Image (tube, rainbow, N blue to C red):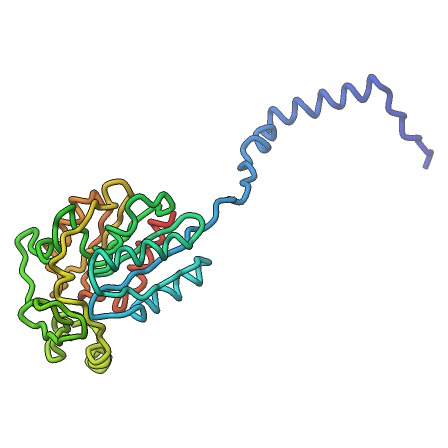
Amino acid sequence: MPHHPIPRSTPRRRRTLVALFAALTLVLGLGSVASAAPPHKKPSSAPKPTVVLVHGAFADASGWADVTKKLQKKGYTVYAPANPLRSLSGDSAYIRAFLETIPGPVVLVGHSYGGAVITNAATGNANVKSLVYVAAFAPDAGETVAAASELGGGHSELLANIVTRPYPGAGPQDADAYINPSSFRALFAADLPAKETAVMAAAQRPATFTTFLEPSGEPAWKTIPSWYLVAENDKTIPPEAERAMAARAGARTVEIRSSHVAMISHPKAVTDLILRAAR
């Protein structure tokens, strides 16, 4: 077979091939491939906010255990400090001082009476980017926790099932308040096993009775975006009051079928709401 040498490429030939390739690209729509590719996204440099979880009365920080684990698994730094439960102003000052030790953005979460504490503790703190209320009090200025529980026309049997015990230094009208252990599960945690609630009732931390009668200060929810979880089966804070407080605060609200301790019986729903606030 005769050998045919491959013709050398000339500048004219190269220009012709380039033009032909460009024409084919346009006809076949290949030119849109590069422009259609999604732009490369740079990883976000914004730090994750620190999540601070504040418990309420008749409980302690261990109630946040499952929520803490879920948030830590997502890479969040979490703190669940002890709420002193001595007075609304004193408890709020304590949490306010705790927040001042945390650099960067904060998501502040309160359960039950802890909601009243975060309402006061976050006021004026520019690092607190969002508030999350979990079946919690969100009182207005001058409003007591006792008065807030009557919003919306609901009714709670809590006061009728309080047991008081004196403590050193208590004023003549004050005492430590506990939920009667015989009523604890029905009022506080009806959707948890009885064996678990029996331990919770035995270990409950009391709040001073006058804590519930102290007027609240300027509420942080007037200036900080808020989220609220309403516990539809709550027997401690009436769900009607929870809805009223959430609406007044302009909070993004979800409702679930839960007892008062939603963070224990429904930790995923509570965590999901905190994550929404964190974003």
